[in-house]
Structure formats: structure tokens, C-alpha cells
Length: 231
Image 1 (spheres, rainbow, N blue to C red):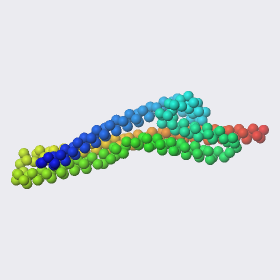
Image 2 (cartoon, rainbow, N blue to C red; image 1 turned 90 degrees about the vertical axis):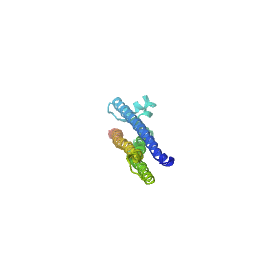
Image 3 (cartoon, rainbow, N blue to C red; image 1 turned 180 degrees about the vertical axis):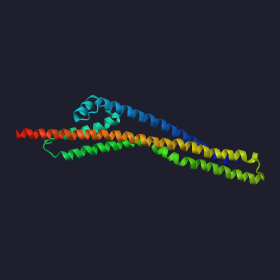
């Protein structure tokens, strides 16, 4: 094979090598990120002792306002608490229709959950793309190498092992490398996709508990107000 033919096969191998490096970099970064999020979320839940009432969350926000920005569960609770405090600051909140504010709090929590999902999914697109394209890139290098190996056979008029072993062996390496790159990418993508769903499910539970506590607090306050007026 001439230089241009060899360069194409070599370029395919270098491309696959770069994809492999990128794949393992994303896998290691995502593994560390997910482990860190789970650890910080669990610590926050333990600090609250499972109590997601507005009073408990308000106390937590006042004490650890800056640190909550780096915790997933903290960001979710912070935006919900901020909206709830804004609702209570209204002059006639006690007599107003709470349903509208409760819907606003729910929408705010849902929006923050979507932001957390986008952050968790960042980087997974690389794994999906590499997992789906790497085998075809390797196959391209193999087909190209074999095609020109057959061309050399025709030029030399011989199909001996010395003629075909080197070019075909080099070409088949491209397919093997493509598969070797794709397998970790696909496994990593599916693994992190499941982990992200688990993290998001936990955040949704936290948001639901906080929303329930807000509604319960308002109902208790409304009932107390009515009893006071009757007396």
C-alpha cells in the first residue's frame, strides 16, 4: 500500500484511539459526579432528618445558604422555599386562594428538577455518539485496508501470506478497536442513564415531600384561623 492508503487506515486507528480516551474520560468524570451528588444529597437528608416542612427548610437555608448551591437537593429545596416565602409575604395570603400559589411552587420545583436533569445528562451524548459510530469507523478502516490489500495482490499477481498478512491484519485491527471502543461507551451510557433516573427519582421525592408539607402547613393555618373567627 502507498502512503495515502496507509495514512487512511492509520487515521482511522488514531480516531478510534481518541474516541477511547474521550470515552474513559467521560466515564470517570460522570462516575465521580454521580457519587458526589449521592453523598451530598444523603447528608442533606440526614441533616433534615427526613423533615421537609417549610420551617425546617427555612432554618437550613438560613444556616447553609451558600453551601446549598453545590447540592442538588439543596438547590431544589432552596427554589421551593424561596417561592413559598414570597407567597407568605403577600398581605392577604391567609385569605387568598392558596391553590394558585401551590401550583406556582410546584411549577418552580418542576423547573428546577428539569435543570438538574439537564446537568446530569451532560456528557452522555458523547457516550451515545461514540457507542453508535465507533464500530462503523472501525469497519470503514477494515474495508479500506482490505480493498487496497486486494489491489496489491492484483499488482503483484500473488496471494501469498507475505503479501496479504500485513495489510489485512492491520485492517482487521480497526474493526477490533472500533468494537473495543463502542462496548465501554454503550455500557457506560446505559449505566449512567439508570443512575441519573435514580437520582432524579430521589429529588422528586424530596420535592413532593416539601410540596406536601407546604400544603399541610397552609391547611392547618387556615383551619386555625377559621376556628379563631368562630370563637
